[in-house]
Length: 182
Image 1 (cartoon, helix red, strand yellow):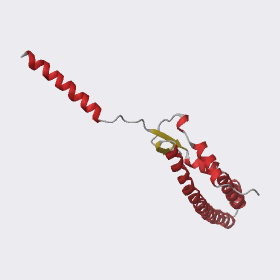
Image 2 (cartoon, rainbow, N blue to C red; image 1 turned 180 degrees about the vertical axis):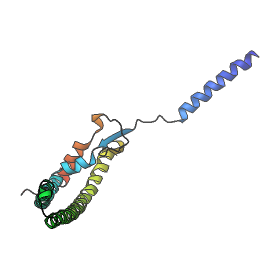
Image 3 (cartoon, rainbow, N blue to C red; image 1 turned 90 degrees about the vertical axis):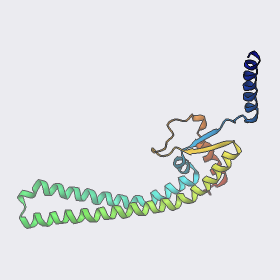
């Protein structure tokens, strides 16, 4: 019985050692995070797109803001002096406010849709170029995964600042896709 009790632990120890030798040691996995939307906008090209969009859409937005203020003033005038107006004047003013509000809302929706479409087209090309830069950077620096932490729905709860590659990617993007000086 003594021989058997010595053999079994020795066999188990040998089996465990053999299993350890057969399994390669897992290399640590490097993970990076990027604020993708902020990176796109922070590039020189992104800044140029933002400025062009602002120049294109701000005048129309200002016109819509003025129309909204005029409608609000008309509504206030109707509420303040409605009792002193004749029924026909009050009805006409109310119809004007209602129709003006409908057209204003329609015009605001049109402006927003047009701006989003323009922004989407501009950003799509940039996103493709940035994706290539991120892939190259991750490969060269040994990152197994790059996570986008731009949105609030991102499942990343915490990441060390040293894992954030946003600034590096912006620099690489600007170097690879310089914007001509005006």
